[in-house]
Length: 287
Image (cartoon, rainbow, N blue to C red; front, side, top):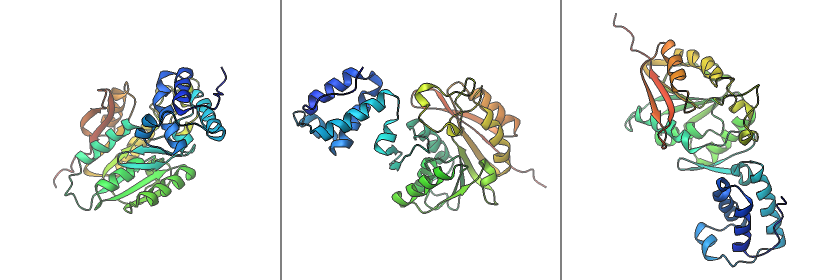
């Protein structure tokens, strides 16, 4: 089916676009209109009779074609909201998702607001979303964020500049191997955990970087790699927290247990699905 909708009013174009797209894209269509026309939600509704120029219509039609091809909206408009921030997103980074805010909440709950001098690490930082949210909420902490993708780190640094969060430092490297010397109160990670069939990502994720998504046949390959080295970098009593798929809690908790962590727990997302598993490095025995 052609994605070309003839120039018309905002209301008519929106109605036609919603008919041509799957229901899951309807909210994206509204965001696309608002971004393209530089209007807010109220204007989207109140100015429904606004005539559209040929240029605007062409831009919107291109957006519809991209959405139907499962291109993330964030790639079309260049930004994505996360926590209280608006973050720059490119094709070099995973699009930050609301479910990952559960990882931020879990870390903050183990770092009280009056906790000063805390050291935090974010492994596989991507856009810097989690690291920046933690740095924002715990301004007296020191946050180290690692990614093996130099292009992703460039985006993360731009996000640090645009949000004016200055207590996050970025490092290039492979998981905990990229961290500078020292031990951490909390280490968090949103690693690749998508189960891949013969190395292929699901079609709805093919526009996002495979390095940030593909977790092998059971989705746990990278988690098995990162956990032991991350545990070695925890302070006694420090916490390691891993985001994962909703059917992977048992597997991730087993990896945490095998690496010597205690006080294991799993935190659900807003839909009640298992989302973050965590454990604590035991305190050192008294001499």
